[in-house]
Image (cartoon, rainbow, N blue to C red; front, top):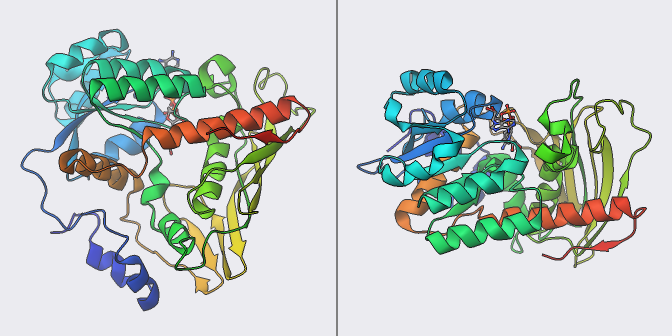
Length: 372
Ligand code: NAD
């Protein structure tokens, strides 16, 4: 069976023969299988840019889950969503009434898409209501919060996954495949950046909402890619430097504007990374003695571009929707009782790396061990 937006046959048909053969066993997101009798119901918590622009539309394409409700501070907005997505107005909740979700069998999954410092509160509320949780990155604003979230979901017997959409993107999957021992093995020399110029002072520039600056928001993609490229492991230590003076101290009053950091992996691998709200940047490169992969456009929703030492990768399939694949994979994992590729523990690992990076930056770039 094929989805309207993505068929395995079409996807594979657009790979080089060798890459297709190599990818086939791993590209097992089970989209060939028949959809369930009932799609899991998802409630989005927070109807901002990401929900409106990406997750909502993706939930029109998913085969194993559908948008069944929302949690919002704006009831009128909730009613517009109910109309647009065809769910009952009784499935509109306020942040303060999330406990009522417990009585709603139409909602199976709560997807937390609020500012970073609210992720823990909303995940705990969803778990208490007995709902599975997908939480956006960064998982929270501290490792302690991540522990509380993992503990709450475990006690409630619900699943917790993080919105790491790139695990479902074919370019990043190919990088992970190349880093496997039977292929080129873990990459050892890496560098990357994810930055964009931010012009005003939204919650992202206010520490009590964001927990930090660009590192929390987009730099996390670079450190996550480095861990993927290093074979799915965390670095043992980091060093970091905040770039000063800030070019716009009025906007970035209590978060960094630009930060650089270095990651050191157990096998001798290293990564040089940068993230900023004062410039553009969207790249990642990983190499080892066997080969390299170079993303000129590394973290976007579609239109990624990468070349390897074997030649350009061409996954020209605009119909691949990272978010739809990610949410369908979560729904399948729930339905089939399989472990997630992107569990809460992965979000916690990244938070431990982020905390070590901030510690190093605060202490003048001292080498700081990562305790995962
Ligand atoms: P946004 O500001 O556009 O939306 C945030 C939503 O939270 C708004 O609807 C806002 O009303 C609501 N909200 C609830 N309580 C709030 C409060 N006290 N203060 C401010 N807003 C409050 O943000 P966004 O870009 O949609 O990001 C939301 C989350 O999604 C963030 O954690 C972000 O890191 C993540 N995100 C992930 C991706 C991805 O590619 N995975 C992309 C964008 C954003």
